Image (cartoon, chains in turn green, purple):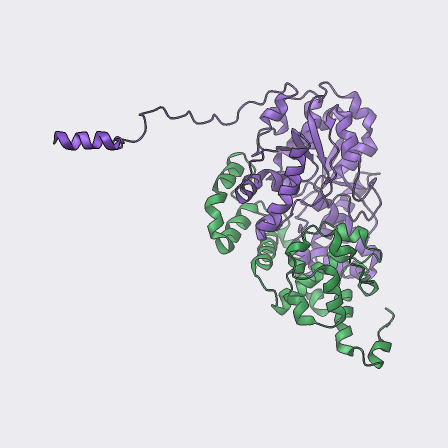
Length: 198
Length: 335
Protein backbone atom coordinates (compact mmCIF):
# COMPACT_ATOMS: atom_id res chain seq x y z
CA UNK A 1 0.00 0.00 0.00
CA UNK A 2 1.62 3.33 -1.00
CA UNK A 3 2.02 5.72 1.90
CA UNK A 4 0.46 8.89 0.53
CA UNK A 5 0.41 10.28 4.00
CA UNK A 6 4.03 11.09 4.79
CA UNK A 7 3.84 14.56 3.33
CA UNK A 8 0.96 15.58 5.56
CA UNK A 9 2.74 14.27 8.62
CA UNK A 10 5.92 16.14 7.67
CA UNK A 11 3.98 19.33 7.12
CA UNK A 12 2.53 19.00 10.61
CA UNK A 13 -1.02 18.74 9.26
CA UNK A 14 -1.58 15.29 10.70
CA UNK A 15 -0.05 12.99 13.26
CA UNK A 16 1.32 9.59 12.29
CA UNK A 17 -0.99 7.79 14.73
CA UNK A 18 -4.04 9.58 13.34
CA UNK A 19 -3.37 8.39 9.82
CA UNK A 20 -2.73 4.90 11.09
CA UNK A 21 -6.42 4.59 12.01
CA UNK A 22 -7.47 4.94 8.38
CA UNK A 23 -4.88 2.39 7.40
CA UNK A 24 -5.89 0.01 10.18
CA UNK A 25 -9.57 0.07 9.16
CA UNK A 26 -8.65 -0.37 5.53
CA UNK A 27 -6.42 -3.37 6.25
CA UNK A 28 -9.00 -5.04 8.47
CA UNK A 29 -11.66 -4.83 5.75
CA UNK A 30 -12.27 -7.76 3.42
CA UNK A 31 -11.21 -7.27 -0.16
CA UNK A 32 -9.43 -4.09 -1.24
CA UNK A 33 -11.39 -1.42 0.61
CA UNK A 34 -10.31 1.67 -1.43
CA UNK A 35 -11.02 3.64 1.76
CA UNK A 36 -7.95 5.82 1.24
CA UNK A 37 -9.43 6.91 -2.10
CA UNK A 38 -12.52 8.65 -0.63
CA UNK A 39 -12.86 12.12 -2.16
CA UNK A 40 -15.55 13.32 0.28
CA UNK A 41 -18.16 13.80 -2.45
CA UNK A 42 -21.05 12.75 -0.20
CA UNK A 43 -22.72 10.45 -2.72
CA UNK A 44 -22.87 7.77 -0.02
CA UNK A 45 -24.86 9.85 2.47
CA UNK A 46 -27.10 11.14 -0.29
CA UNK A 47 -27.90 7.59 -1.42
CA UNK A 48 -28.45 6.20 2.06
CA UNK A 49 -32.07 5.27 2.87
CA UNK A 50 -31.42 5.45 6.63
CA UNK A 51 -29.05 8.43 6.86
CA UNK A 52 -31.67 10.32 8.88
CA UNK A 53 -31.16 7.91 11.79
CA UNK A 54 -27.35 8.05 11.68
CA UNK A 55 -25.14 10.12 13.98
CA UNK A 56 -22.80 10.75 11.05
CA UNK A 57 -23.18 10.16 7.33
CA UNK A 58 -20.65 7.71 5.87
CA UNK A 59 -18.79 10.62 4.27
CA UNK A 60 -18.41 12.37 7.61
CA UNK A 61 -17.36 9.13 9.28
CA UNK A 62 -14.61 8.62 6.72
CA UNK A 63 -13.37 12.17 7.29
CA UNK A 64 -13.28 11.42 11.02
CA UNK A 65 -11.30 8.25 10.32
CA UNK A 66 -8.79 10.26 8.39
CA UNK A 67 -8.58 12.74 11.27
CA UNK A 68 -7.80 9.89 13.64
CA UNK A 69 -10.90 10.37 15.79
CA UNK A 70 -10.89 6.75 16.95
CA UNK A 71 -13.21 7.00 19.92
CA UNK A 72 -15.81 9.19 18.20
CA UNK A 73 -15.88 6.90 15.18
CA UNK A 74 -16.29 3.74 17.24
CA UNK A 75 -19.00 5.36 19.37
CA UNK A 76 -20.99 6.45 16.31
CA UNK A 77 -24.22 4.59 15.64
CA UNK A 78 -23.64 4.85 11.89
CA UNK A 79 -22.27 1.32 11.25
CA UNK A 80 -25.09 -0.13 13.36
CA UNK A 81 -27.81 1.73 11.45
CA UNK A 82 -26.35 0.72 8.07
CA UNK A 83 -28.73 -1.81 6.49
CA UNK A 84 -26.18 -3.20 4.00
CA UNK A 85 -28.27 -2.25 0.97
CA UNK A 86 -25.16 -1.37 -1.07
CA UNK A 87 -26.76 1.68 -2.68
CA UNK A 88 -23.72 3.77 -1.74
CA UNK A 89 -21.32 1.05 -2.86
CA UNK A 90 -22.53 0.94 -6.46
CA UNK A 91 -22.72 4.73 -6.68
CA UNK A 92 -19.36 5.55 -5.09
CA UNK A 93 -17.12 7.04 -7.81
CA UNK A 94 -14.04 5.73 -5.98
CA UNK A 95 -15.42 2.21 -5.47
CA UNK A 96 -14.96 2.28 -1.72
CA UNK A 97 -16.32 -0.94 -0.17
CA UNK A 98 -18.46 1.18 2.17
CA UNK A 99 -20.69 -1.59 3.52
CA UNK A 100 -17.68 -3.77 4.30
CA UNK A 101 -15.94 -0.85 6.05
CA UNK A 102 -19.08 -0.59 8.22
CA UNK A 103 -18.71 -4.28 9.18
CA UNK A 104 -15.08 -3.62 10.12
CA UNK A 105 -16.08 -0.65 12.28
CA UNK A 106 -18.71 -2.77 14.04
CA UNK A 107 -16.20 -5.46 14.96
CA UNK A 108 -13.69 -2.81 16.11
CA UNK A 109 -16.36 -1.12 18.24
CA UNK A 110 -17.27 -4.47 19.85
CA UNK A 111 -13.65 -5.24 20.64
CA UNK A 112 -13.11 -1.75 22.08
CA UNK A 113 -16.53 -1.87 23.85
CA UNK A 114 -17.28 1.57 22.48
CA UNK A 115 -20.71 1.21 20.91
CA UNK A 116 -23.34 3.58 22.28
CA UNK A 117 -26.29 1.17 22.33
CA UNK A 118 -25.95 -2.54 23.04
CA UNK A 119 -29.06 -3.77 21.18
CA UNK A 120 -27.40 -4.36 17.82
CA UNK A 121 -24.11 -5.85 19.06
CA UNK A 122 -26.01 -8.22 21.36
CA UNK A 123 -28.27 -9.27 18.49
CA UNK A 124 -25.27 -10.07 16.29
CA UNK A 125 -23.57 -11.92 19.13
CA UNK A 126 -26.68 -13.96 19.95
CA UNK A 127 -27.09 -14.86 16.28
CA UNK A 128 -23.45 -15.95 16.11
CA UNK A 129 -23.80 -17.97 19.33
CA UNK A 130 -26.70 -19.89 17.78
CA UNK A 131 -24.75 -20.56 14.59
CA UNK A 132 -21.71 -21.68 16.58
CA UNK A 133 -23.83 -24.11 18.62
CA UNK A 134 -25.99 -25.56 15.86
CA UNK A 135 -24.41 -24.61 12.52
CA UNK A 136 -27.76 -23.11 11.53
CA UNK A 137 -29.63 -20.03 12.58
CA UNK A 138 -32.30 -20.63 15.21
CA UNK A 139 -34.94 -17.95 14.93
CA UNK A 140 -37.11 -18.94 17.87
CA UNK A 141 -34.18 -18.97 20.31
CA UNK A 142 -32.80 -15.78 18.84
CA UNK A 143 -36.10 -13.92 18.95
CA UNK A 144 -37.03 -14.93 22.49
CA UNK A 145 -33.59 -14.22 23.91
CA UNK A 146 -33.30 -10.92 22.07
CA UNK A 147 -36.77 -9.55 22.79
CA UNK A 148 -36.74 -10.54 26.46
CA UNK A 149 -33.49 -8.70 26.93
CA UNK A 150 -33.99 -5.61 24.78
CA UNK A 151 -37.65 -5.16 23.92
CA UNK A 152 -39.73 -6.77 26.69
CA UNK A 153 -42.41 -4.14 26.11
CA UNK A 154 -42.64 -5.06 22.46
CA UNK A 155 -43.44 -8.68 23.32
CA UNK A 156 -47.21 -8.35 23.92
CA UNK A 157 -47.58 -6.58 20.56
CA UNK A 158 -45.47 -9.27 18.92
CA UNK A 159 -47.54 -12.17 20.25
CA UNK A 160 -49.99 -12.41 17.31
CA UNK A 161 -47.08 -12.36 14.87
CA UNK A 162 -45.09 -15.00 16.76
CA UNK A 163 -48.19 -17.13 17.18
CA UNK A 164 -48.95 -16.81 13.46
CA UNK A 165 -45.40 -17.79 12.51
CA UNK A 166 -45.52 -20.87 14.73
CA UNK A 167 -49.00 -22.08 13.77
CA UNK A 168 -48.25 -21.57 10.07
CA UNK A 169 -45.14 -23.70 10.46
CA UNK A 170 -42.81 -20.82 9.74
CA UNK A 171 -40.87 -20.92 12.99
CA UNK A 172 -39.64 -24.13 14.60
CA UNK A 173 -39.47 -24.23 18.37
CA UNK A 174 -36.50 -26.58 18.40
CA UNK A 175 -33.20 -25.85 16.62
CA UNK A 176 -31.79 -27.79 13.65
CA UNK A 177 -28.24 -28.99 13.94
CA UNK A 178 -25.78 -29.87 11.19
CA UNK A 179 -24.18 -33.33 11.23
CA UNK A 180 -20.51 -32.36 11.32
CA UNK A 181 -20.68 -29.80 14.07
CA UNK A 182 -17.23 -30.87 15.32
CA UNK A 183 -15.73 -30.02 11.92
CA UNK A 184 -17.33 -26.56 11.91
CA UNK A 185 -16.13 -25.97 15.47
CA UNK A 186 -12.57 -26.88 14.55
CA UNK A 187 -12.66 -24.51 11.57
CA UNK A 188 -14.04 -21.62 13.60
CA UNK A 189 -11.60 -22.22 16.45
CA UNK A 190 -8.67 -22.05 14.06
CA UNK A 191 -10.18 -19.00 12.29
CA UNK A 192 -10.51 -17.15 15.59
CA UNK A 193 -6.87 -17.77 16.39
CA UNK A 194 -5.87 -16.48 12.96
CA UNK A 195 -8.01 -13.39 13.58
CA UNK A 196 -6.08 -12.63 16.75
CA UNK A 197 -2.67 -13.02 15.18
CA UNK A 198 -3.42 -11.12 11.95
CA UNK B 1 -31.17 -30.92 -18.56
CA UNK B 2 -28.99 -28.88 -16.27
CA UNK B 3 -27.91 -29.99 -12.85
CA UNK B 4 -27.20 -27.52 -10.11
CA UNK B 5 -26.04 -27.58 -6.54
CA UNK B 6 -28.49 -25.99 -4.16
CA UNK B 7 -27.63 -23.96 -1.07
CA UNK B 8 -31.09 -23.53 0.49
CA UNK B 9 -30.18 -21.39 3.49
CA UNK B 10 -31.75 -21.48 6.95
CA UNK B 11 -34.85 -19.46 6.22
CA UNK B 12 -36.02 -21.82 3.48
CA UNK B 13 -36.67 -24.35 6.23
CA UNK B 14 -38.46 -21.96 8.53
CA UNK B 15 -39.87 -18.51 7.81
CA UNK B 16 -39.66 -18.95 4.02
CA UNK B 17 -40.97 -22.51 3.91
CA UNK B 18 -43.44 -21.41 1.25
CA UNK B 19 -40.52 -20.44 -1.00
CA UNK B 20 -39.05 -23.97 -0.74
CA UNK B 21 -42.43 -25.64 -1.23
CA UNK B 22 -43.23 -23.61 -4.32
CA UNK B 23 -39.71 -24.11 -5.71
CA UNK B 24 -40.10 -27.88 -5.28
CA UNK B 25 -43.43 -27.69 -7.07
CA UNK B 26 -42.20 -25.83 -10.17
CA UNK B 27 -39.03 -27.88 -10.67
CA UNK B 28 -40.75 -30.74 -12.45
CA UNK B 29 -42.61 -28.69 -15.05
CA UNK B 30 -39.37 -26.82 -15.79
CA UNK B 31 -37.24 -29.98 -15.85
CA UNK B 32 -34.86 -28.46 -13.29
CA UNK B 33 -32.69 -30.55 -11.01
CA UNK B 34 -31.07 -29.36 -7.85
CA UNK B 35 -28.81 -31.35 -5.58
CA UNK B 36 -28.61 -29.99 -2.05
CA UNK B 37 -25.12 -29.33 -0.66
CA UNK B 38 -24.68 -31.96 1.99
CA UNK B 39 -24.47 -30.76 5.57
CA UNK B 40 -24.35 -27.08 4.61
CA UNK B 41 -24.23 -24.53 7.43
CA UNK B 42 -25.62 -21.03 7.98
CA UNK B 43 -23.93 -18.28 5.92
CA UNK B 44 -23.86 -15.92 8.90
CA UNK B 45 -26.39 -13.53 7.33
CA UNK B 46 -25.46 -9.91 8.01
CA UNK B 47 -24.46 -10.67 11.60
CA UNK B 48 -21.22 -12.64 11.60
CA UNK B 49 -19.34 -10.21 9.33
CA UNK B 50 -19.76 -7.51 11.96
CA UNK B 51 -18.15 -9.59 14.70
CA UNK B 52 -15.05 -11.29 13.30
CA UNK B 53 -13.66 -11.22 9.78
CA UNK B 54 -11.81 -14.51 9.30
CA UNK B 55 -14.32 -16.71 11.19
CA UNK B 56 -17.14 -15.12 9.18
CA UNK B 57 -15.49 -15.88 5.86
CA UNK B 58 -14.47 -19.37 7.03
CA UNK B 59 -18.08 -20.10 7.98
CA UNK B 60 -19.19 -19.14 4.46
CA UNK B 61 -16.26 -20.92 2.80
CA UNK B 62 -17.06 -24.25 4.46
CA UNK B 63 -20.16 -24.34 2.25
CA UNK B 64 -18.13 -23.51 -0.85
CA UNK B 65 -15.58 -26.21 0.01
CA UNK B 66 -18.33 -28.82 0.51
CA UNK B 67 -20.01 -27.72 -2.72
CA UNK B 68 -16.78 -27.89 -4.73
CA UNK B 69 -16.14 -31.46 -3.54
CA UNK B 70 -19.68 -32.47 -4.33
CA UNK B 71 -19.52 -30.78 -7.74
CA UNK B 72 -16.53 -32.92 -8.71
CA UNK B 73 -18.62 -36.06 -8.22
CA UNK B 74 -21.41 -34.60 -10.38
CA UNK B 75 -19.08 -34.08 -13.36
CA UNK B 76 -19.61 -30.85 -15.19
CA UNK B 77 -21.49 -28.90 -12.56
CA UNK B 78 -19.91 -25.82 -11.07
CA UNK B 79 -22.96 -23.72 -10.29
CA UNK B 80 -24.24 -23.18 -6.78
CA UNK B 81 -27.78 -21.82 -6.65
CA UNK B 82 -28.96 -19.79 -3.67
CA UNK B 83 -32.63 -18.76 -3.53
CA UNK B 84 -32.02 -16.33 -0.64
CA UNK B 85 -30.49 -12.96 -1.55
CA UNK B 86 -28.44 -12.70 1.65
CA UNK B 87 -27.01 -16.21 1.22
CA UNK B 88 -26.33 -15.48 -2.44
CA UNK B 89 -24.47 -12.29 -1.57
CA UNK B 90 -22.42 -13.90 1.21
CA UNK B 91 -21.34 -16.87 -0.92
CA UNK B 92 -20.53 -14.63 -3.90
CA UNK B 93 -18.73 -12.15 -1.68
CA UNK B 94 -16.50 -14.77 -0.04
CA UNK B 95 -15.61 -16.24 -3.42
CA UNK B 96 -14.81 -12.78 -4.82
CA UNK B 97 -12.86 -11.33 -1.90
CA UNK B 98 -10.76 -14.46 -1.52
CA UNK B 99 -9.55 -13.69 -5.04
CA UNK B 100 -9.34 -9.90 -4.69
CA UNK B 101 -7.31 -10.21 -1.51
CA UNK B 102 -5.33 -13.46 -1.74
CA UNK B 103 -4.12 -13.17 1.87
CA UNK B 104 -7.75 -13.60 2.98
CA UNK B 105 -7.98 -16.74 0.86
CA UNK B 106 -4.83 -18.14 2.45
CA UNK B 107 -6.09 -17.57 5.98
CA UNK B 108 -9.56 -18.94 5.25
CA UNK B 109 -7.98 -22.06 3.76
CA UNK B 110 -5.77 -22.43 6.81
CA UNK B 111 -8.93 -22.46 8.94
CA UNK B 112 -10.71 -24.86 6.59
CA UNK B 113 -7.69 -27.16 6.83
CA UNK B 114 -8.51 -27.64 10.53
CA UNK B 115 -11.68 -29.35 9.35
CA UNK B 116 -9.97 -31.26 6.54
CA UNK B 117 -11.40 -29.00 3.83
CA UNK B 118 -10.06 -26.53 1.27
CA UNK B 119 -11.49 -24.22 -1.36
CA UNK B 120 -9.82 -22.55 -4.29
CA UNK B 121 -11.64 -19.29 -4.93
CA UNK B 122 -13.15 -19.01 -8.38
CA UNK B 123 -13.86 -22.75 -8.68
CA UNK B 124 -17.60 -22.29 -8.40
CA UNK B 125 -20.20 -19.99 -9.93
CA UNK B 126 -22.54 -18.59 -7.31
CA UNK B 127 -25.90 -17.65 -8.78
CA UNK B 128 -29.34 -16.69 -7.54
CA UNK B 129 -32.42 -18.75 -8.38
CA UNK B 130 -34.04 -16.04 -10.51
CA UNK B 131 -30.82 -15.73 -12.53
CA UNK B 132 -31.07 -19.45 -13.39
CA UNK B 133 -34.76 -19.16 -14.28
CA UNK B 134 -34.44 -16.08 -16.48
CA UNK B 135 -31.11 -16.76 -18.17
CA UNK B 136 -30.71 -20.58 -18.18
CA UNK B 137 -34.29 -21.86 -18.33
CA UNK B 138 -35.35 -18.81 -20.32
CA UNK B 139 -38.51 -16.74 -20.50
CA UNK B 140 -39.71 -18.59 -23.62
CA UNK B 141 -39.76 -21.93 -21.81
CA UNK B 142 -41.46 -20.37 -18.80
CA UNK B 143 -44.10 -18.77 -21.04
CA UNK B 144 -44.76 -22.13 -22.71
CA UNK B 145 -45.59 -23.73 -19.34
CA UNK B 146 -48.25 -21.19 -18.39
CA UNK B 147 -51.63 -22.92 -18.07
CA UNK B 148 -53.45 -20.19 -16.15
CA UNK B 149 -52.34 -16.70 -17.09
CA UNK B 150 -52.03 -14.23 -14.23
CA UNK B 151 -53.77 -11.58 -16.34
CA UNK B 152 -55.74 -9.25 -14.10
CA UNK B 153 -53.36 -9.59 -11.18
CA UNK B 154 -51.60 -6.30 -10.54
CA UNK B 155 -48.15 -7.09 -9.18
CA UNK B 156 -45.24 -4.91 -8.16
CA UNK B 157 -41.90 -6.63 -8.69
CA UNK B 158 -39.73 -6.21 -5.59
CA UNK B 159 -36.14 -7.29 -6.18
CA UNK B 160 -34.68 -6.09 -2.89
CA UNK B 161 -31.20 -4.74 -2.40
CA UNK B 162 -28.76 -7.57 -1.86
CA UNK B 163 -29.49 -9.31 -5.15
CA UNK B 164 -28.51 -6.71 -7.76
CA UNK B 165 -25.86 -5.06 -5.59
CA UNK B 166 -22.88 -4.98 -5.38
CA UNK B 167 -22.98 -7.53 -8.23
CA UNK B 168 -19.39 -8.79 -8.23
CA UNK B 169 -19.87 -10.90 -11.36
CA UNK B 170 -21.96 -8.43 -13.43
CA UNK B 171 -24.95 -10.72 -13.67
CA UNK B 172 -27.81 -8.21 -13.54
CA UNK B 173 -29.31 -5.84 -16.08
CA UNK B 174 -28.96 -2.87 -13.70
CA UNK B 175 -27.90 -2.19 -10.12
CA UNK B 176 -30.83 0.00 -9.24
CA UNK B 177 -33.57 -0.80 -11.73
CA UNK B 178 -33.04 -4.38 -12.85
CA UNK B 179 -35.82 -5.83 -15.01
CA UNK B 180 -35.37 -9.58 -14.56
CA UNK B 181 -38.30 -9.96 -12.17
CA UNK B 182 -40.53 -7.67 -14.28
CA UNK B 183 -39.82 -9.77 -17.37
CA UNK B 184 -40.48 -13.04 -15.58
CA UNK B 185 -43.80 -11.86 -14.11
CA UNK B 186 -44.83 -10.52 -17.51
CA UNK B 187 -44.08 -13.94 -19.02
CA UNK B 188 -46.62 -15.34 -16.55
CA UNK B 189 -49.19 -12.89 -17.89
CA UNK B 190 -49.35 -10.70 -14.78
CA UNK B 191 -50.10 -6.98 -15.01
CA UNK B 192 -46.70 -5.74 -13.88
CA UNK B 193 -46.71 -2.30 -12.33
CA UNK B 194 -43.65 -0.12 -12.72
CA UNK B 195 -42.09 0.08 -9.26
CA UNK B 196 -39.20 2.53 -8.86
CA UNK B 197 -38.51 1.29 -5.32
CA UNK B 198 -37.80 -2.20 -6.60
CA UNK B 199 -34.30 -2.33 -5.12
CA UNK B 200 -34.92 -0.23 -2.01
CA UNK B 201 -34.08 -1.90 1.26
CA UNK B 202 -36.76 -3.61 3.42
CA UNK B 203 -34.80 -2.86 6.58
CA UNK B 204 -33.02 -6.20 6.89
CA UNK B 205 -32.22 -6.99 10.50
CA UNK B 206 -33.30 -3.52 11.65
CA UNK B 207 -36.81 -4.90 12.28
CA UNK B 208 -35.21 -6.70 15.23
CA UNK B 209 -32.71 -4.16 16.49
CA UNK B 210 -33.97 -0.73 15.44
CA UNK B 211 -37.65 -1.18 14.65
CA UNK B 212 -38.35 2.50 14.02
CA UNK B 213 -35.76 2.61 11.27
CA UNK B 214 -37.18 -0.57 9.72
CA UNK B 215 -40.83 0.52 9.99
CA UNK B 216 -40.12 3.62 7.92
CA UNK B 217 -38.45 1.56 5.20
CA UNK B 218 -41.32 -0.95 5.19
CA UNK B 219 -43.86 1.88 5.10
CA UNK B 220 -42.26 3.46 2.03
CA UNK B 221 -42.37 0.19 0.11
CA UNK B 222 -45.89 -0.79 1.12
CA UNK B 223 -47.34 2.71 0.70
CA UNK B 224 -45.88 3.09 -2.77
CA UNK B 225 -47.12 -0.33 -3.87
CA UNK B 226 -50.55 0.58 -2.50
CA UNK B 227 -50.64 3.96 -4.23
CA UNK B 228 -49.81 2.31 -7.52
CA UNK B 229 -52.84 0.09 -7.13
CA UNK B 230 -51.01 -3.19 -6.67
CA UNK B 231 -52.91 -6.26 -5.51
CA UNK B 232 -49.74 -7.79 -4.17
CA UNK B 233 -45.95 -7.65 -4.18
CA UNK B 234 -43.65 -10.34 -5.60
CA UNK B 235 -40.31 -10.99 -3.95
CA UNK B 236 -37.17 -13.07 -4.48
CA UNK B 237 -35.84 -12.88 -0.92
CA UNK B 238 -36.92 -14.51 2.39
CA UNK B 239 -35.77 -11.48 4.38
CA UNK B 240 -37.85 -9.06 2.32
CA UNK B 241 -40.86 -11.35 2.57
CA UNK B 242 -40.46 -11.63 6.34
CA UNK B 243 -40.13 -7.89 6.92
CA UNK B 244 -43.00 -6.82 4.70
CA UNK B 245 -45.32 -9.67 5.67
CA UNK B 246 -44.65 -10.34 9.34
CA UNK B 247 -43.91 -6.76 10.39
CA UNK B 248 -46.63 -5.04 8.35
CA UNK B 249 -49.08 -5.24 11.22
CA UNK B 250 -46.65 -3.68 13.70
CA UNK B 251 -45.71 -1.04 11.12
CA UNK B 252 -49.41 -0.18 10.71
CA UNK B 253 -49.73 0.19 14.48
CA UNK B 254 -46.69 2.41 14.60
CA UNK B 255 -47.90 4.85 11.94
CA UNK B 256 -51.64 4.48 12.53
CA UNK B 257 -52.09 3.24 8.96
CA UNK B 258 -54.22 0.40 7.63
CA UNK B 259 -52.26 -1.04 4.74
CA UNK B 260 -53.00 -4.56 3.62
CA UNK B 261 -50.35 -5.47 1.06
CA UNK B 262 -49.70 -9.19 0.67
CA UNK B 263 -46.30 -10.32 -0.54
CA UNK B 264 -45.62 -13.68 -2.21
CA UNK B 265 -42.49 -15.35 -3.52
CA UNK B 266 -42.17 -15.22 -7.32
CA UNK B 267 -42.02 -19.03 -7.32
CA UNK B 268 -45.50 -19.14 -5.76
CA UNK B 269 -46.82 -17.00 -8.62
CA UNK B 270 -45.04 -19.23 -11.13
CA UNK B 271 -46.71 -22.27 -9.57
CA UNK B 272 -50.13 -20.61 -9.85
CA UNK B 273 -49.47 -19.74 -13.50
CA UNK B 274 -48.41 -23.34 -14.16
CA UNK B 275 -51.85 -24.40 -12.91
CA UNK B 276 -50.75 -25.86 -9.59
CA UNK B 277 -53.13 -25.65 -6.61
CA UNK B 278 -52.37 -22.96 -3.97
CA UNK B 279 -52.11 -25.63 -1.27
CA UNK B 280 -48.97 -27.06 -2.94
CA UNK B 281 -47.35 -23.65 -3.12
CA UNK B 282 -47.41 -22.63 0.52
CA UNK B 283 -50.07 -20.00 -0.22
CA UNK B 284 -51.94 -19.20 2.98
CA UNK B 285 -48.83 -19.25 5.18
CA UNK B 286 -48.34 -15.51 4.74
CA UNK B 287 -49.56 -13.38 7.65
CA UNK B 288 -50.99 -10.67 5.39
CA UNK B 289 -53.44 -12.86 3.49
CA UNK B 290 -53.26 -12.94 -0.30
CA UNK B 291 -56.77 -14.40 -0.50
CA UNK B 292 -58.52 -11.29 -1.84
CA UNK B 293 -55.66 -10.44 -4.16
CA UNK B 294 -55.73 -13.87 -5.79
CA UNK B 295 -59.52 -13.75 -6.12
CA UNK B 296 -58.83 -11.25 -8.95
CA UNK B 297 -57.58 -14.11 -11.12
CA UNK B 298 -60.17 -16.57 -9.92
CA UNK B 299 -57.83 -18.49 -7.61
CA UNK B 300 -59.61 -19.63 -4.51
CA UNK B 301 -57.45 -19.92 -1.46
CA UNK B 302 -59.10 -22.03 1.22
CA UNK B 303 -59.33 -20.25 4.54
CA UNK B 304 -56.64 -21.64 6.77
CA UNK B 305 -58.36 -20.44 9.89
CA UNK B 306 -62.07 -19.95 10.30
CA UNK B 307 -62.68 -16.43 11.57
CA UNK B 308 -64.18 -16.42 15.03
CA UNK B 309 -67.97 -16.17 14.83
CA UNK B 310 -69.17 -12.77 15.96
CA UNK B 311 -70.60 -12.95 19.44
CA UNK B 312 -74.34 -12.69 19.54
CA UNK B 313 -75.99 -10.03 21.65
CA UNK B 314 -76.71 -10.96 25.25
CA UNK B 315 -74.43 -13.95 24.94
CA UNK B 316 -71.38 -12.52 26.64
CA UNK B 317 -70.18 -12.97 30.16
CA UNK B 318 -72.88 -12.38 32.81
CA UNK B 319 -72.67 -8.69 33.60
CA UNK B 320 -75.12 -6.42 35.37
CA UNK B 321 -77.34 -4.85 32.71
CA UNK B 322 -76.47 -1.27 31.80
CA UNK B 323 -79.30 0.93 32.89
CA UNK B 324 -80.00 4.41 31.67
CA UNK B 325 -80.05 7.11 34.31
CA UNK B 326 -83.83 7.49 34.10
CA UNK B 327 -84.27 3.76 34.58
CA UNK B 328 -81.91 3.91 37.56
CA UNK B 329 -83.99 6.62 39.16
CA UNK B 330 -87.16 4.60 38.55
CA UNK B 331 -85.57 1.59 40.19
CA UNK B 332 -84.55 3.61 43.23
CA UNK B 333 -88.04 5.06 43.44
CA UNK B 334 -89.51 1.54 43.57
CA UNK B 335 -87.27 0.72 46.49
